Image (cartoon, rainbow, N blue to C red; front, side, top):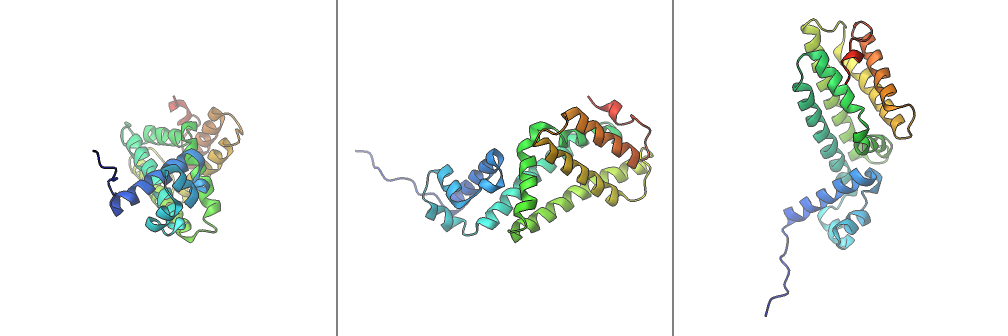
Length: 207
């Protein structure tokens, strides 16, 4: 006769399972859907079990956000590094950041700014991730300036402005304002001006 006893999961396995569930929910429905009840339903367990291993939903939401956008940054770093030349790397990275296939992560970013006002842990995580993104883009711009491809004074300031435009255009994409190509060309034209490039220098590199 077979035993009906279930294999008991370790604490680390439960924590990992909860994290996986939270990320799946966030990518499907946004950060606002990462709730105690939502995670429990996704896992098919009681809410009390989730609360035992993840006593702070604020922390779980913050960790979920950091994991998702951190993975996106790593991916885009690889996209940029695979290109030949700093202008090509910039065009590839910026185009990828405005890709509508990233709508799930765009929603997570947009919700993070609103939810962060009531979730200090999330707000701290958002600031940390925004600093990482700005540092990466500023580094790419600075390398292009040293190579003589770009002409500007302050890479940190330019990176912050570019990211602000990307965030705005991506938020617009969630409601379908302008066509994808129009949004991307608007960004490229603005960046061309910021970097002292001739008109079309980046747009002409777009696929």
